[in-house]
Image (cartoon, rainbow, N blue to C red; front, side, top):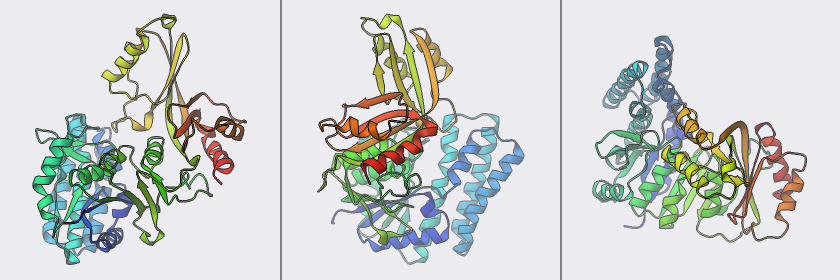
Length: 450
């Protein structure tokens, strides 16, 4: 059998029956597509997260549950109320109600994962039925039988070896004549308990399944035709990029481009699987191919923006000509699973940035009281918020002459709190005030990319 394609569709692409039909058209247009990975229908995950937090009174809960049922019922009605699928969806909605009531009494990360995962379980049931009605041999697959993870609920890590074994055993033999429909974002630990890979993890799921199945290509179908030079909602002159390297795309995803989940490209890069990003609403518009190498390698390829950044500054005279201070700081952060983005140091202080957008879905602050208390035993801790991280993505940036002057001349009217340059040849990034970020991105695009 020739290499297969794994196609992933986001929430807006399965928002309703009409959108699902567009997805089916895209799937059936490519005979190589044998595995389809879906997110929950648009809006569903947000409703489930709200219920999982356990902070709503019964009336507010009922309103959320009603809205959730309306989204599913509208699709069921468009499909003609098929009895078996209707029963499955209504049973899932009843389970959601039960779990929401439990969360109101006592919530935890395990319960939240079980509740939030219901969105993908329903969207895939509905899409499988739609394909059946169109005469397609399709099989619904519970991804929890395939995607093996640890037990870190809310942001689980995947066991690649076990996941590959499960995929090869359970679905690889079916791919010759059966279309597999499964869920993104979800996994299960060794005890079969539901886990999730973190918000945006459906892209990552698709790439992991593609890697486990030795796929030839991955398609990520969203609501925009590919990756742009920057967010077109911020800069009207932003334009789609026909092709981009794995390294550049990974930098863009890491530094805020919403089209791809940051981890998506890791499995694709390991197996050198080309990734296509396009719009399910308008597949004819083309999109962006992400490959190991590209025909052109411009100095400046794109500008990325990531909001909700936290700046932490640690002050201590014990740093002066001392050993081990940073090791102790990073040891504390590692124990609490907090990842650092940028870092700068002086003799008596160190500043680092944390990504608040990457914090867990339960609403807890990225630096909790326990972390602050442990850091406080080492040094004085200063925490500042309302920052944004701007990143220029390109090639040979640490080697080219005059890059810094071009960039900072373009935004000389703005104050910059932190700069990281030289660690990578593919990015130059800096921290700015949140309120100024949009204007800065526009200026950089105008001066360097237009």
